[in-house]
Structures are given as structure tokens and as C-alpha cells.
Length: 143
Image 1 (tube, helix red, strand yellow):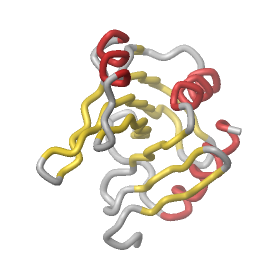
Image 2 (image 1 turned 90 degrees about the vertical axis):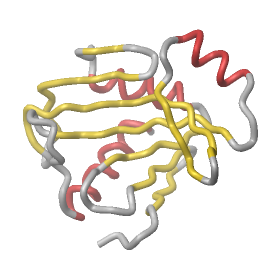
Image 3 (image 1 turned 180 degrees about the vertical axis):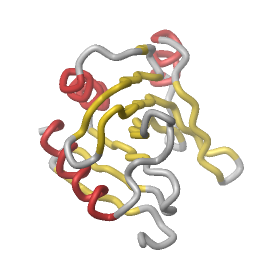
Image 4 (image 1 turned 30 degrees about the vertical axis):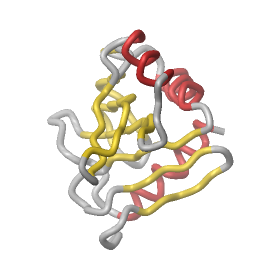
């Protein structure tokens, strides 16, 4: 459906990359200011069930045209090239985030990933129409 490479959708000041396979629907964000992106998503969805520097989780959420009783997981992570592979780990706490971002190298980056699953943590966004809907939905949130 989407080929072997990740697809990138570019918007004003941010982009979303979709995975190259169709088994896991993770939306990866690039943004001039990922803290603003994270803030806008948190403001829209309200008080999370779980909230740490590297992971914000909302449970029992509803997204029109996608479903009810959804789990939304927003992971804030640090990525680095290791032996020609990108390795990403979520930030442990604010100090960890600050230290890693203060000393960032050209082969390293910060990334936000958004994953939406049903209440059994199974993939809920399984077809192109739902992907396209989510892209438009996220675009409205991040304006």
C-alpha cells in the first residue's frame, strides 16, 4: 500500500512520517519546536492517564471516524545513528532530556511518535482512508 519507504506529509512548520509497513500505524512528528507540538496535542486531548517526560498516554479516548475506547501514546525520544541504524529511546526525565538535547550531535535528533490503538492495544488505523483522516485530524490540532 505505501511501498517500502516511509511516506512523509509536510505541513506548515511540521511533518508526519508514516511507517513503510502496514502493520503498525505510528505517526512520527518533525517540528521546528517539538515542545509546542507536544503541548498542542496534550491541550487538545486533555489530562493524560500517564505523563512522564518521555511518554504521555491517554486511555478511553474517542476519535471520530477512528473509534472509541482508544489508547493514544505520545513518545518523546532521542535518536542516534548506531552502526548505520537509527536507535531511539524515550527520555527518562527532564534532566535526561535536557542533557541529551544540550549535547546533540549532527547524527542525533529528537523525535515524537504518536501511536493509536484499540483498548486491547491492537492497531486500529488499518486502511488508507483512516490514515488520511488522521493526517487531516492532526493537521487541525497542530495549526
